[in-house]
Image (cartoon, rainbow, N blue to C red; front, side, top):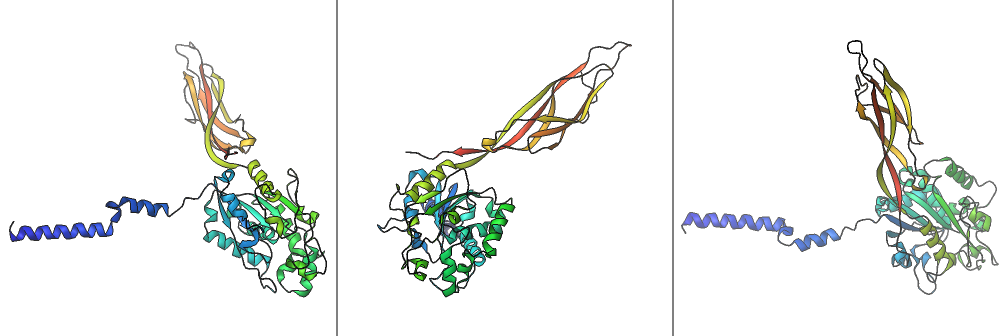
Length: 394
């Protein structure tokens, strides 16, 4: 090989080396595969745990070390759901942030953790956590549409007597927000807004309440000298779905969200709610309605600027019509079809399509009328439906 041949060979080797340096996946495809696996694909649903006042990520851990979020992560009944444990700042005393401020912090954290990338979001909320979740969803309707339901444990929808008493000694604004004082405008306005906003008032709210008093040395109970119920029955269950009875939890306010195992009432209640509200998969199906027997005699026309054609919808599948299209089929001897094809001018929410169509019959030939024109009108509906996905039950 001459001198120029060696030089050409060296240049090719250098180019190949540079290619491999910047494209390792071409020679090591298993490395690229591992990198892809490092980006987990969100499951259809995410279960978000939101702790209460003076709580933390450890608020869900029982005395035997069992951690509720981990119980769900390893339970095949929740195989299609991710689990997120949220946290927000709430110091043990003299905090400075209001519920509105913390709701915004919570939303930001959930966005950073990619919670809103899931198709469905459900919340397990303890005490103040339930209030923050509602406030957050009211402020962010784009995310609220993803939320199927909230399960609240000891959330003081009508306030707490202990919070009112504690606010005398502790100037944390959260205690005023949670007070059961008659002039608590925050909680009243929150419930009023919830019921008045279409973006949230379709979200199911299921509730559990504590049936044991909290000892004086625990949580906000330290402001009292006796055992006391932190959140009463009526406050914990106000505004919740009436189709599912409130769940009694045989524990105090703190321990009600610390199930010892999967047979504990707190865990079982959430499981039953989850099972009864399965993940919904979006599907688009087509369904036709054919109006037969349209006819136009010789020299005559058949037209309708607003023929109303209905289609049956299954409310259990939350079916709704996306759009519809019309056409004339089985046509014989049609003339002057106008518009061509027929036009669907609008579709009502109840699934009725408004169709404009028109055509003429045959003309006379040598003063003789030869038959008539006839056709059928087919309206094809494109329907969005939500099909429940059942997770393993054993």
